[in-house]
Each structure stands twice: as C-alpha cells, then as structure tokens.
Figure 1 (cartoon, helix red, strand yellow):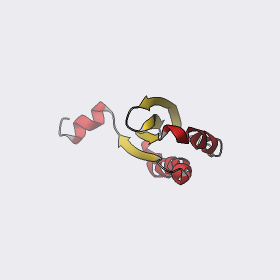
Figure 2 (cartoon, one colour):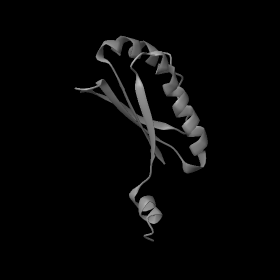
Figure 3 (cartoon, helix red, strand yellow):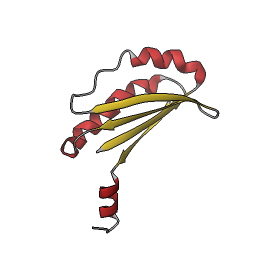
Length: 99
C-alpha cells in the first residue's frame, strides 16, 4: 500500500520547517519513504510531496507512524498537510467490480 503525503507552508516559514525536520524521528523499517520532493507553489509558498510504501498488513501501524512524523510541524503557523491512502490499478479495478 502507499500513502501520499502532501504539505505546504508559507515561504517565510522555511527555516522553521527545516529546523523541525531535524527533530523528526525515523520511520519504522517497514515504511519506506520516497521524497520528500519540494517545489514552489504560487498560492501556498512551498509545496511538498512524499510517498510512503508499506505492507497492507502493517497499514494501521504505518498510518500512525506517518501521522506522528508530520504532527511535529503543526506548531508552525500556516503549515498544512494531508495524507491520502492510494492503491494500485489492479486493486482499484477490483474495487470497481472488474475481476
């Protein structure tokens, strides 16, 4: 399974985000993160995307670990994030009734 993490913050808060990133605890070994990838966003300052991969059997533990790693940024004014669980094409097709 994967979770897509998307966040953004005002450009002027970049130093605070950088400092907080040094305080984050490592994710458990069963969660593999790709990214983060950052880019400027004309409306929201800096945008960031990270992809977290993990085994479906560990989904609950993974969700908790990922959320905890992002919650540290909540003290930064203007920081926003969302987490979205996604599935592959085969799983999605099965959920839509195609076997």
